[in-house]
Amino acid sequence: MSVSSYITGIQHVGIPSIDLDATIAFYKSLGFTQAGLFPNGENRCAFMRLGNLTIETWEGDPTNPTAGAINHISLNTTDVDRAFAAAKEQGLHLVNDEVQSIPSFWDHGIRFFNILGPNQETIEFCQILD
Image 1 (cartoon, rainbow, N blue to C red):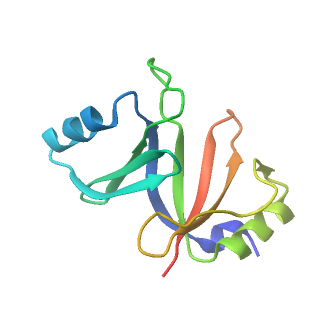
Image 2 (image 1 turned 180 degrees about the vertical axis):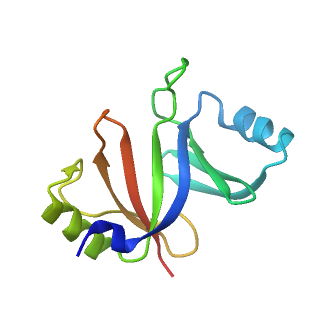
């Protein structure tokens, strides 16, 4: 089965932040609401939402303050393990050797993996755990 069988749409766009509090305030000024603020090791990660668009922004990683600064796009994945197996079978350029997890995000954590597109863009396949 193709990895596309496990994708339901875009989940979020990932943008690293120089100053997370200022970034949150900026997106709030545009009408976004803060859907979540989570610890991620020593750092924090915020999810800002406006309609069906969610932006993940976080502190602690280098930023690229030029055009093209988006870090990744994330696709909502119904079964990350099956999607990972399908991506391997399709020969997609996997960034991760196995499915990753962040237990502090949302109520029960997330599981995800990343691939590289033809322009070296990172595409994340993410499942929010129930």
